[in-house]
Every structure is written in structure tokens, then in C-alpha cells.
Picture 1 (cartoon, rainbow, N blue to C red):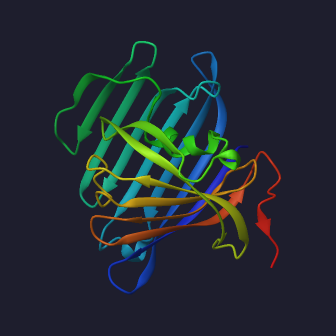
Picture 2: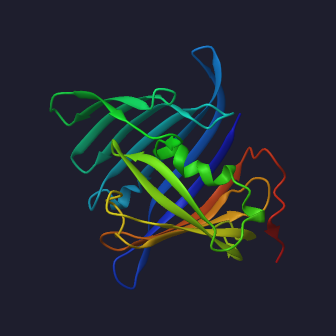
Picture 3: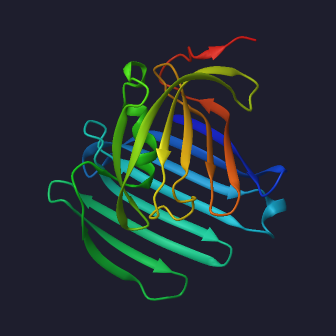
Length: 241
């Protein structure tokens, strides 16, 4: 058994917020090619009542070296309305490139090789990366570069520490959290360029994301922790009411 996290995704276009989707994040230890890896699965799907507006069935998987956090393999299978994407990436960090195979709907498969810089992450390992940092001793305003491959395109973002605060999750519990922001550029096309994604992680050894808010190209989203199971450490950031 590994760590299991689930989240409610709320969306608004105007004054009304609606819970439109469920996101789950599962992390387990496995053996790949004779070596121990962390296998991370990120799945998202709209609730059935919203499928007629915008149907999403997303699956992202990442295999990383747990000692260096270097990505080894990445798989993406996404369905957005009538568009289906199949993408696989194999990373060679020592040689500074990755190989990819990409297929959109019924179009031919395209393959290629793309150079990358050192410390480059795939989409899933990049989302987990902040949990590997010593956030407790990070001064507000400290900037940390995060390089990742988004939609087969290498890009660089900045993560900025923003102090501490208290957040209430969907499970009704309040958590003391470390806060940080990520400034969005034009390469991350789902989000509004120039906006900040705001993330709150529990201020304990687990560093569980409790709340995320972001501006999209159209509308905004708020993502709330719904359930957390299989944590490696006792949750000490929760605050009794």
C-alpha cells in the first residue's frame, strides 16, 4: 500500500462555484528495470453531471528515481471532450534528452528526441517536487526554479515561498500550512498567463497539498483536499476545532 490523496475540484465562471471533478494521486514503491522507483499516478475526471459540458478523463503516470528525483518514464492518456491524447516519454538525464511518442485521435504517431537541461521533471514529478523541499526553514520571498516538460515542451517556472497560514480542507479539518506561489508563463496553456497558482502544503513531514487555487484562461479553480490515506508520517499539522 502507498499514499492515496483525493481532491474536489471546484470551478467558477462568474459568482457561482461548482464541484465539477475528482482528482486522485497515488504513490507506490515498485521495481522497474531492476531498480527501485516511485510510481506516481495522477487521475482526474469530471463528475457525470458535467460530462455534457466538458468531459475529462485524464491519467498521468510517472516513474522516478527516489534518491535523485530524476524522471525515468512518463505516460499520459487524456480525453478532453472528443480529443484523445496518448503520450509516452523516456528520460535519459545523464545524456540530457528524452524520447517521446505522441498520438492525437486517429492521426499518425509522431516520435522524436528533445534535449533538456539538468534537473528537468515531467508533469507529475514536478507537481510532487515541492514536497521534497525544506519548506519549514524557507524565508518568505525565496524563489526556487522548477524546470519541467509540459506537453512535450521544456519550460521553467518559479516557485516562491509565501509564509504560513491556516486552511480548512473539505474533510472539515483545519491545517497549519506552508504557502507558496507559482508564476505562470505562456507555455502552461491551461492557466492564465502572468497569474499565480497558490499552493498550501501541511506544515509537517508529510507536506500534503491541502488547497490549491488558480486562474484559468476561462474561469478559476479551487482544489480542496478530500481524503488522505497511507501517509508515511503521523499528521501533526491538523488543528483541532
